[in-house]
Amino acid sequence: MLQIPTWPIDAFDQFWELYPRRVGKKAALREFEKIQRRNEVPFEVLISAVKIYARSRIGKEMQYVAHPSTWLHQGRWDDEPDALLNIRIESPKLISDVPAALTEQPVAKPNDAELDEQFRRLGLAHLRVK
Image 1 (cartoon, helix red, strand yellow):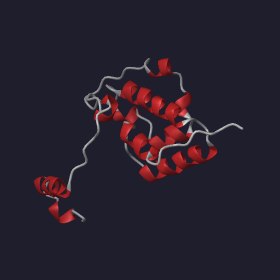
Image 2 (image 1 turned 90 degrees about the horizontal axis):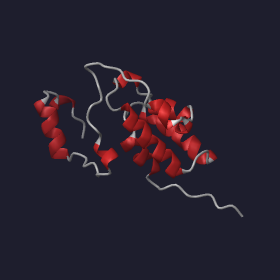
Image 3 (image 1 turned 90 degrees about the vertical axis):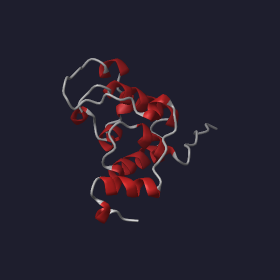
């Protein structure tokens, strides 16, 4: 009998940390769960493709980075990696820093005190929800 590999419990969180444009999280989660339920692609292949895509977007305008739900819905993990590297767009709004997740370093989430300080510094303390 063919054994289907299991996905980690935090599979979506791993995907989300690596994806270069973190917008539309609920829509992305819905698409992610569909892929997982249908076992369309092994988790390792999906994560590897996300890393390749994220690296290919460094130096590109954010508007040219697909929303995560679109990337998932279109099965973009099957895209040819070489095709991702052919376009170079110059603009002041470039993705220039390599996200920490792509260097395999854990990303520390801010604690409540740090978040409070950030909201205060931005003059948005009155909007902080705890």
